[in-house]
Image (cartoon, rainbow, N blue to C red):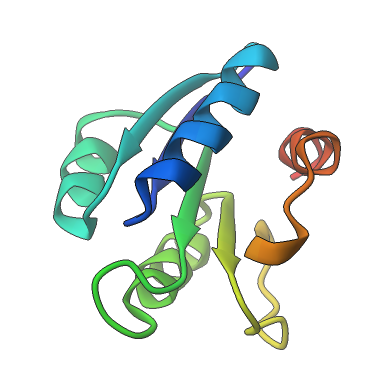
Length: 110
């Protein structure tokens, strides 16, 4: 199982996703700001980064996630819209469409 970094400004989203991922056997590091996410990312190796599209301002999470994906990091963006962006290792999940089984399968596939 993998090590996953998750950044989201909504604590209930962090809790629910962390609970699902831990049940799936993954190690999860959850943070609420991009500053914390960047520090954690620089300090460790992650198999997957899950990032809210809008952490502190509009599209800031997407911009950081795109930088990571362009560098070869596998990234899942939890957001609304933005499905027109295509990069290897980059996936999108609509927050309203979140489903535990589907999400865990996506993490295994990317």
